[in-house]
Amino acid sequence: MSGDANLLFLSIIVQDMDQFRQYEQVEAIRNRIPALSRTVYGKPLVYLDNAATAQKPDVVIERVDAMNRGVNGNIHRAVHRLSEETTLWYEQARDQVRDFIGAAAREEVIFTSGTTAAINTVAYAWCTQFLKAGDAVLVTEAEHHSNIVPWQLACQRAGATLRVLPVDDKGQWQMDVLETLLDERVKLVAAAHISNVLGLVNPVQALIDAAHRVGACVLIDGAQGIVHAPVDVQALDCDFYVFSGHKLYAETGTGILYGKRVWLEQMPPFLGGGDMVDTVTFEKTTYAPLPLKFEAGTGNFIGAASLAPAIDFAREMMGGQFEENQLEISAYLKEEFSKIDGLRVYGEGEHKIPLFSFSVEGCNHGDIATLLDKLGIAVRSGLMCCEPLITRFGHTGLVRASFAPYNTLAEAAVLVQGLHRVLRMLRG
Amino acid sequence: MEKSIQVLEREVVEEFAMFPEWMDKYEYLIEIGKSLPILDEREKTEEKLIKGCQSRVWLSCHMEEGRLVFAADSDAIITKGIIALLIRVYNHHTPAEILASDFGFIREIGLQENLTPTRANGLVSMIERIRTYASDNC
Image (cartoon, rainbow over all chains, first blue to last red; front, top):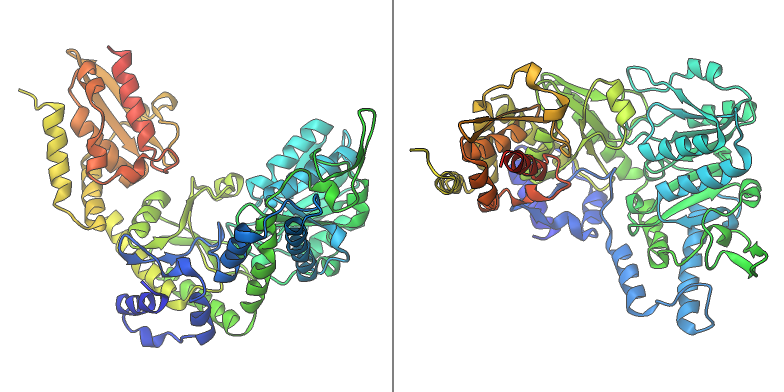
């Protein structure tokens, strides 16, 4: 089914479609994302699991395809033409990322396999050098497991302790408690720009400033943030900013570790191997300069290169109609969800992306997601890799609908109608 | 005379065949789940909890005159429906009869997607637990 036909189908499902304003730019961009026009169980796909992974636009698919077909030589190593061309595209993507996040230098932009690998690199390399017995690492209660576990491991190795900044019932960081948690023993603070469960844009600037006042280094997990908020790492003055490519429309298995040069220079390598060395003898090895020092072995260089068209694409969907569209979706869902008996949305705040994690009294999250799936609606359910946070709210799981700039209000309406039907079935 | 596992499997397959639409199949599954006798809260122990399921599901089993008798509960109603189906087919059969079954009817009724190990409702873990009970009592 083509994109247009899919929309027609949606308009049939959703009565009074006319009440929803249509944004030409949003409709046009959807036609450039092949996966959005597929069907599941014979129904048009309504993809609302964008916080887990985003669908790929044609420009990304074509870049990966073109490279696999003819621009595939291992980077940085050979003098032959294929290697040169591949290296060029790879390094060009690095420049584009540097520009996108406002890094001071390309040497501060390191390709990784994703957010998790980027965090682990810092948790290993930075902590090896700077985290000592008796020190502390501070995280928040709303972190993803991948921004908790690497720090637990680092603390165990160093004999340091892990401190946790709690959230309130709205899911907001308890900034008044921050003062008591931040002292000179805290060497590093790790926190999400935007929570993958709550969708709240966190006050990272205040956190970074407070941490710096006690001399602590700050890592911002931008897995969700990079997609929904403009990021300027120099303005933020964070020490590290990490994110994944696959949530930003690029190929899966790609990610970025941004780090201030002053830290990256002092950190020992994380992984040893090819491409990260200067000279190797059995007695002593010297390392390659940044950024290659942290890019050991053959990485996913084709995937990394796909970040270039992906960023172009992401930029196309910023501001203007896309922003209006997202605000409308959020307002619509807030209204509709409030009408559903026993439904509670987690994460309340002024700055919230169109991401809604919710529970419905008397209904299991897995049941809701399973049935929505049969209606063609893809949502996430479960712990969402945030067990401490979801436990804090007294649940064993939640349902999450996460919207990308390419989702429409009509799709939000399909979700609401689907939810009504599913809850009728479950509550029977 | 008790119906054989094969006959019960056939019955389930035929019932599900009456519902071509997915939502109807699940509606039926939910109905079956509601008919599952509720497990006493005291019975919901750690050892009866089936690991590998995102939703919590407890399965208890005891022997009566050489046959296995099951009872179960879950906090997810679809999971309850699936375990109720399994119980309907395998309840009051001998361990040898249960072990001889290939559990293939699940695939036939179109629930094969639930056989993926990562799937939230952990059908695989439920089947494994039933087989373990059977082989332990062989």
